[in-house]
Image 1 (tube, rainbow, N blue to C red):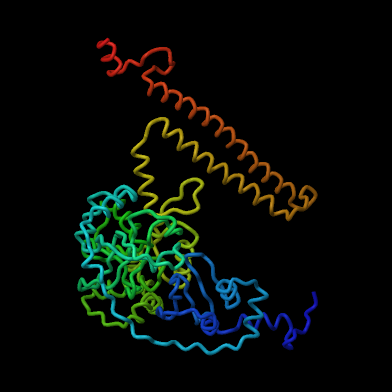
Image 2 (image 1 turned 45 degrees about the vertical axis):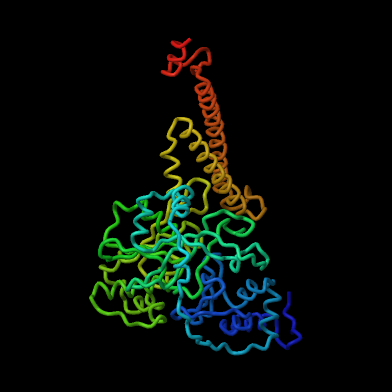
Length: 465
């Protein structure tokens, strides 16, 4: 298609290039996005995992694994298509972005007088999240855990803005300063309510004016390294799974994916290890990781094991690690292993799965788990077959250069699919036999179903009669 002069006197290509070159902070300002400075970058106050980097004129929304230039930012925020975004960026009168430095209001932990005995919170963490009393008690002793009654209607997702002044119990995860002062908190609902909280089923709220960089954190021994997770629940789960091997470490929850939290704690732990006072501004703390990179901090082998990211194993977590490494940070990644068929998992999933595996290790349970694994492997094989076939773009390959190799590969993949189908059929038959034996056992019969099983209970019943 030949390029036509647009009504604004520019060719189509020129309009796209101009749209892409728009200052991304000016664009965000025009989109009425309230931004918060985070070191050299800015975060969207409404969703702080969306980061704008003015130096690169790019943006990244880590929790959604998306990002790009000014055009894609308009597409995402205004929910328009590419052409509409280009028109918006060309035809609008944009004001230059000016950061309004509003004084940060002090955090007030107003829930202290509404704190309750940690009974419902303990039940939730133990029964819904699989955490042990030992782990729960440890975090209580560290002063970072509490239960309180809170009004959360203002934050509710499914109420349409209707306020009922309803009070509900929540778990409070406290962020503490180096002096032990509460400087922020995130709240986790205890009672399930999908109508009110359709995204998670439970309330998940960060208290107003919370310090965005500190996060809930605990020290084990004298910290010489840092381990970061995405949420407080994952932090507790990671501790539960690794507590026998953790020593001289600080565990930190970022409440998302935040480079500023890493920078803040990296700066603090290095100051503590050197015995020097840290008197940086919040902006300098947020920029701590980039400062370390710029000063070749990670070229020293002694610092190679300092940072571990124990994030969710999903696209967002993996991308976050890759982008930090691309900047020059040395990151040790400790991601939970995906089970067959999974495309996302976190440390609490690992904890609950491990407990389920321990709880039932019978032959039937093992056979069922193997069947699920085989089905996952079959899905993966089918996906590979479709992906390989898609390389042809719908064109025949048998008469093309390299066609023979392509066909052999396709036959190999399809063979794996059929082989897996046979394994699944055999495993389904095994599960069916074991389920039948389990049914007979529950009825007190032997495996053949031809008589009573010689159990103590059946012998006692026989003697009685």
